[in-house]
Length: 95
Image (cartoon, rainbow, N blue to C red; front, side, top):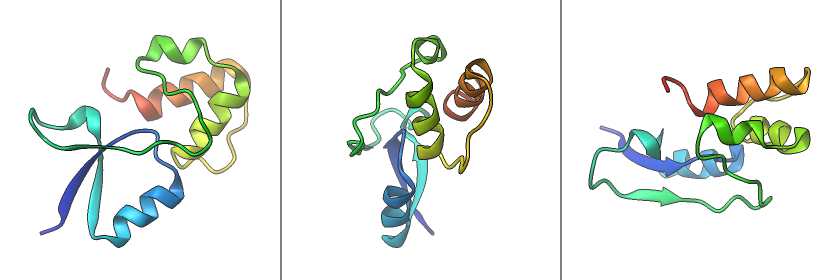
């Protein structure tokens, strides 16, 4: 059985690849059961990490694009509002 790593997002593609190479299945830390170990990776690019969908609204376009890329969206395009909506879907599914 694959070991689960509860990781605070965003996570870059490179960080995901490194964790998977260790045989870990990556799950967003917000889904971690109480008492589970949380892995907090510091994004090398210093991106702001929104804690809620409302925090996304305060982000600049470039930060939104970079966060989308960090979540696996290869070429994020669109108006700022569309990009922010896409980021909310990626980061805050089910909220």
